[in-house]
Image 1 (cartoon, helix red, strand yellow):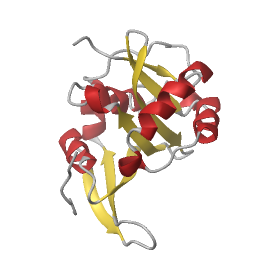
Image 2: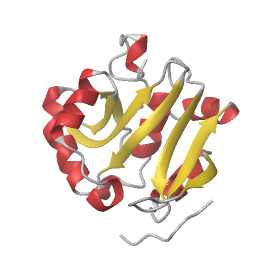
Image 3: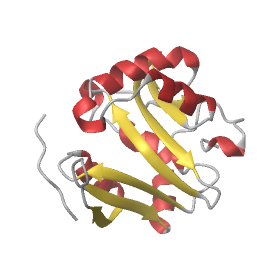
Image 4: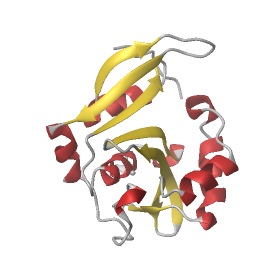
Length: 175
């Protein structure tokens, strides 16, 4: 398998991103086309492609203090286990290096193992209100720098710094 290309999402990618998201509703919940368009318009939606096919995406927000909050990272089910998710996360730390990455993930989601493998630290569990309990994950310090070695160059290197790109059964995992 060749390495994925990670680039900012465009309007033309929205349908493919939505299709991938809909295939993972249990894991990520409902993601609307409007939300995807808004994130893309803010420069806060990256896609991973193999050839011309969109195979994954990451939706995020870069805060003024340098933290990047990941709202969702999704790889098409048939493409998992090939480094695509790692490439998407690594693209978030390429330039400029964020102060830290943070995200929440339901405790019963298999993605918790992925975050731990990347070096994220589980710093707590958010008590449920109407939903499932959420693990709180952060990645900072030397672990951020270590991810850079895994990232292929972004397909669009001239992005403005404010765009942030310049990112089956499961068992319950609680930290």
